[in-house]
Length: 354
Ligand code: GDD
Ligand code: MN
Image (cartoon, rainbow, N blue to C red; front, top):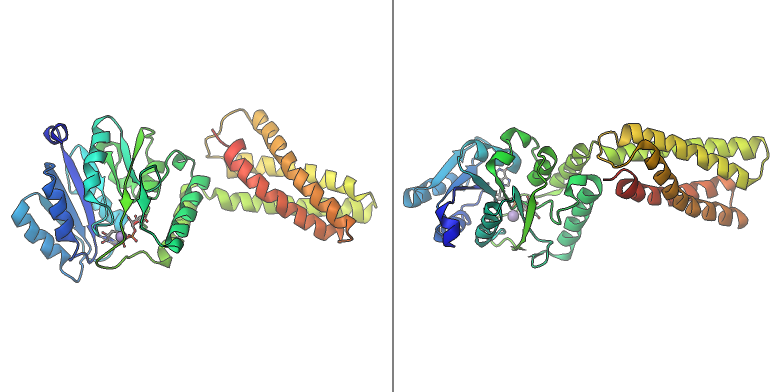
């Protein structure tokens, strides 16, 4: 503890919206650790007088800054305003509803002092956990997988959606936090260049007092945020896939329907044409901004190897289904869907990847 206390220069940012019951408890628990820090409460005009309570607590402790904002404006901008209204070498962001145990703060700090630029308190590293019901857990896992799949910089972090993290102040500029949603850490990961990131485990506690402000609209906001931060790659990939599928159907129809060639021949031509066209569009459009290793040629080779796995699926489906008397066009549609799944995973994870 002592080594942490001596050189410490920390701001703990606590966004609050109707946390009158929780704030005195969390502040008491932070003060008890004797961390020599300032606490920045950013309140959005809570009706339950959270801000007044914070000011009263400051008369007792003397190290609390209260930022009052006129209306509910989201956690992200609250964190930004907390940054703008504080001064310290390190910053920790956490919820004020006791779901993030303040006792984890010294561990985050310790990692920062050891040289980490960003430290995530993580539910999903060994030793961490979440008191979630099964539905909330599934949503959280799904959301995390979505981030991992779409945003390359999150891959190294087990809990990129954590709302509990710390950083060295010079690593994050306040204007890098631009969304009005919950997932500030995602934005920070994308906006900053730091790769010097640590994770410390913690247990996400069930909320005991007050209400969660996270609803379905936050989930939609989250999807939009992931799409924006990933340069809309998932949508572009799907669109490219659709153009490839149309091209595929067109060629199949011409070769088999008009020139009466065998289905195998139609499928080979249709497939080759769509692979080339998809590769070109993905390389120069979908993944234009994605950091990928290798030259275009190498990527094209990889794309073909990967596509041949997809093609295996495609051919089996088309041939087996037509063998069983299903119309060749329908068999083609099913084949395309099967290979699409394979191609998306391979593109994100292998072809356009570092
Ligand atoms: N100033 C301000 N303005 N504070 C807000 C606002 C707002 O509009 N909305 C919420 N807060 C405060 C709450 O008072 C609480 O201290 C904290 O932000 C988190 O809000 P909750 O409503 O309790 O969020 P949650 O528990 O559902 O979600 C938390 O856990 C997620 C992980 O599952 C957040 O930390 C998320 O960021 C995190 O991803
Ligand atoms: Mn909460």
